[in-house]
Image 1 (cartoon, rainbow, N blue to C red):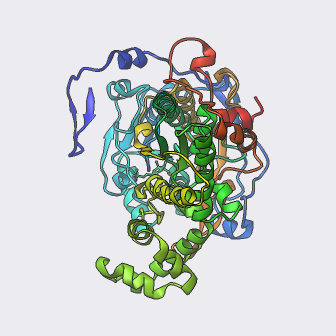
Image 2: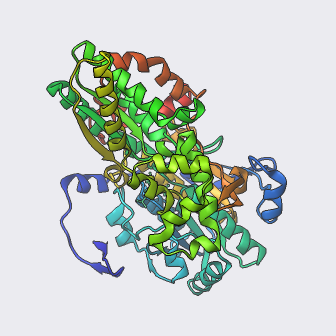
Length: 559
Ligand code: FBP
């Protein structure tokens, strides 16, 4: 089997694999009927961006307004041979290997001489010319497995002309006709910029995106779900269910469980729907209700007190990773910090002096918020950003911050005679545990279809498109395959102090069916112990167990 070594060399070594892996390797992912043979591309009407139409049109003159494409069964299959490059970008998400194996099988079915090259460790591999050819042997070793280790991933932001020009050198050298970028909203925004640049320069290289992220926030009218969300949520929900059972057995701890999702609370909400905890915070609601940190703490403390009054000194709280950024006062602070940190003067300040620099440049109101935060949290907000400028919320221990504050609030309530009970907390953070899990049947099929479909978008000459599979609560045979222009998903947003074209992130909609279902049940779940134990992902067995989609998707599609 081929493994990626730390020095990025691929070597042949026979390693043993688990029995489950062996059995799973034989799984043949399902494809929509339209992709099972030759395809015909049916084009819809011209499209528009979701916002700032005039500005996005000006910025993307060559890739704006293109039609949505849907594939139907066609008659012609073979094409002249071509080569493809593929990049895995950003955080890992279950099913990435299946996107690549679907892409591989897709191009081979068009012409067996077609080749697939994988750029190593993310977009940086394209710029630095680090790649491997993905052979049938390598592909077979990674079918239906979790992880991105087939070629590795990275967060290099592709945005400079110099990077695009370095990229075209290696793309030409390898005879690559199209580049497939598998990534989240930021990476697909960059894919769109790259597609526009190569189109403007007439370089003859197409760029296609694939919607990835466990966070579930790359979705819209055309994209029903980003891949990996299904498996990651099922993995976290299994663990949360196990904790709930332990909690209900020992009856002595409150478990504070933070789950990933940098910005949107889709993961927290889906896990709540699967496990019915006592409390689940939803960042989007915190923002809409303009709740302060103290409001959130009081809300949790009151529930603890109500349960304690009935003799239940235990419970579970799910906390979305991005919560802190949605508390209005902190959101305002982060917006100003972004502007303060964006100047050349700020960039030149030595790291050890940055906190003082920031404090000296904040407005009085934001300085007060900044100073009220625990030092570690303030530091994370002010200093550590990823290459896309995002606050690294996975490093902020919100679960501990909240439980400490709840403990203090309960002590005050005890003094005031408003609480009688014991409060002892345990903390968990589920993020990395789920990002490389072996894909569920849904993600295995969905990802394979997304990759296979990308090969058809390339074959029909598309660039600046996202590979899209719809109707996903129906059996895979009935899924609808096609492509959507990435410009259609864009609007202007402020990033690092400047307005930039970006794909609009999908946050939890408070008037959407998943949140409404949760809101209608949460009071009961808070007081009663209504835990649900979803158990581990099953690959074989009754279809209602193995092929179930997320509750979010079911509720959104009214199933
Ligand atoms: P993507 O948006 O790139 O898919 O990554 C999502 C995510 O897993 C978030 O949930 C989390 O906040 C972040 O990545 C962690 O980043 P890192 O992998 O760099 O620690």
